[in-house]
Length: 139
Image (cartoon, rainbow, N blue to C red; front, side, top):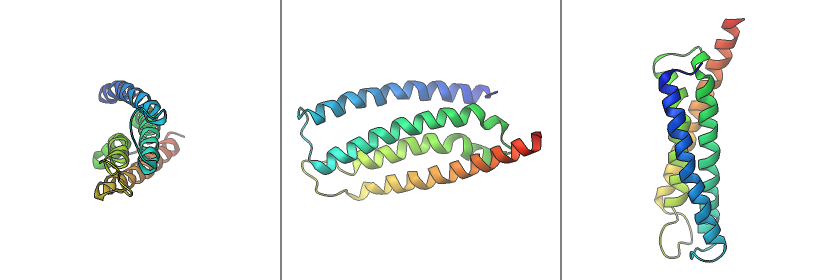
């Protein structure tokens, strides 16, 4: 059973999915040529949108079971909030790294993508190991 804090965060994440939905509308405008964007921007916008949606849904799935993990302290917090943090950092890296009139390659803000990927990896490993340990302990 998720904790009350987990339930609140799940609610926030569900509401955040509405912003991803509006991002989908933005993408349809880009693809139809109503919003000018070059090829790198189009690709990065698509990737940012997809990562945001997938990571938010993954966050909800993890929060639904993480209270059963054999984790505490900083490890439990990493398992709880790591994927939602990555759901902010990675899309931000995709979108912000191709801002401007006609960028031909990503700018320095691409570092947000790699920081998000590192946080995501750490959170997934922590949650996975914690849940396996919790499951084994419950046998």
